Length: 185
Image (cartoon, rainbow, N blue to C red):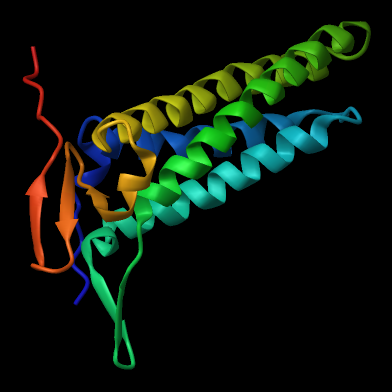
């Protein structure tokens, strides 16, 4: 049965980072939609923001409903979806894409100074939120890399809780906490 983890979105670091990932991506899309003109390279920014929004929202919903720690059964076969590995891969790729998208938005912002103020302003806000969204992707990838003991292939058996990560042992059917909770100052 699926249980709702209502505390996940407010737990630091993973819950807040995963929530910020899809919210900042959606704000980038809103900023681009508010522009009265789109430049030729804006397609990469749209692609990056849409990909980040959809992947982030899907992963966030999976963590919200606790699917990251479930072993699923189809027929007679059991399988575990490694959401930590999926999150790591797409966060690394999106971090690089957001770096390019930020540069494009800054370029389009300066290029838009000769036109309506709406163009420069919307690309300036898009650049700010590209930096924020790319930062959440990069920081999440860094935290997952550290949780895997610096071996990303170990992410196949790790699942993310709101504040920590835990190791799943499929043979024993048990979990052990690998992340360390940091005291809040």
